[in-house]
Length: 186
Image (cartoon, rainbow, N blue to C red; front, side, top):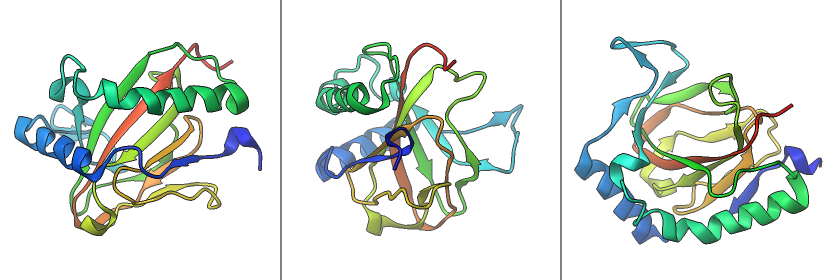
């Protein structure tokens, strides 16, 4: 398999207790907003989910940043040996996602677009336990790229890989997603 087209799994990045504490912080702040709304109307039927910017939950980074440093070091090391993307060190975007019953991002998409062209590496950290919801699967266009539902696990992938999240049919799925950025792809 071409290393530039693969995903990386990190099975136990955050502990279940830390994941639960992140979910609790998000719910306590009640800073969720519907994604892709324009003047109160969904711009697309492709996405129906709730987002919360990490800065609203942890404005100083004291809570989120220290535990993520080892994780980022591993991503940088893998990138240097395999993907070889030019990255801006310590340039990171983080967002929380909440998918309730019926929510989805059910269109194939990449994390690289005109407005996000500097995104190079994407990741999704599973905050919910896999038994807490049904549906809501993160899948890739290349079906040979596995993902996991284990609480605290992470899936890391090049931002140009097409992926989607299927509709949640029961429960609630929470995730922390992020992007490492660098100069635009050429």
